[in-house]
Image 1 (cartoon, rainbow over the protein chains, first blue to last red):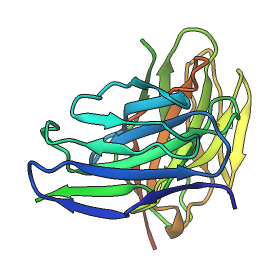
Image 2: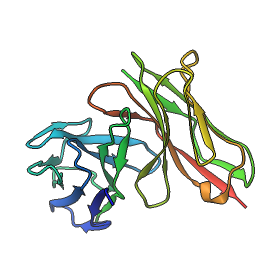
Image 3: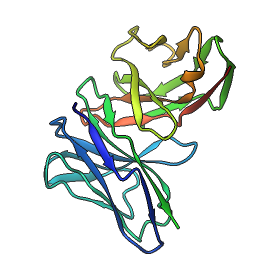
Image 4: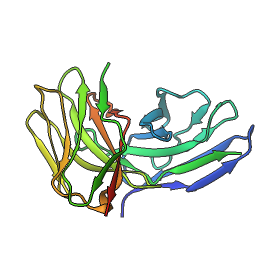
Amino acid sequence: DGGITQSPKYLFRKEGQNVTLSCEQNLNHDAMYWYRQDPGQGLRLIYYSQIVNDFQKGDIAEGYSVSREKKESFPLTVTSAQKNPTAFYLCASPTGLAGAQFFGPGTRLTVL
Amino acid sequence: GDSVTQMEGPVTLSEEAFLTINCTYTATGYPSLFWYVQYPGEGLQLLLKATKADDKGSNKGFEATYRKETTSFHLEKGSVQVSDSAVYFCALSGNSNYQLIWGAGTKLIIKP
C-alpha cells in the first residue's frame, strides 16, 4: 500500500542534542512537507520541498534543517538551536486532489 | 493574507446528537476547502473536501457545503458516535504550491 512512514513514533532527546526525524513515502509524489503541531494548536509549516534537491523555509524554519536527496525521503533535523522542540511532528505530501495532503502518522519529540 | 477560523473547543455532545463545527475563511481567489480529522496520537486524515462554491463534500456521515457568500465551510453530522471523538481541522488551499492554511482545530468529545 502506498503511504508515508515516519519513524520513530516517540523520540526523546536531551537538551543540546540534534535529532533527525525520518519521513519516507512510496507515493511517487514530488512534494513533501514538514509540520509542527503543539497541543491545542493548528499545524505550522516548517519546511517544504517541491522537488528533489530543492526545499523552502516555511513559517517556523528557525532551528530546523532538512535535506531532499531522494524523492522518497525528506528527513528533518531538529537542532540544538530550536528553543522549544517538544512537539508532534507531521510529514505530509500533496495528493493532487485540488491541494489535499496525505499525512504520515507523526513523531512525538520530547526534550528532557 | 489567507486565514481560517474555527470555533473553539472542546465541543462536548452526547451520542446521537447533531454536530456542527463552524469554519469561516478569508482568501483571495477561489480556494479549495478541506476538513481533516485527527484521532488521538495519529496523523491527520482527509475527511472531505470541496473545490468550488456550492459544492458539498461528504464522507462517513459528515457533510460540509462551500458557501462563498458567507465564506464558510461548516462541518455537520446528523448523529454522532463515540468513535467520532477526535480533533477536526478546517483548511484551505489557494495557490499552486498546494500549501494549506490551517485552522486551530476543534476537539470533539462524544459521551455515551
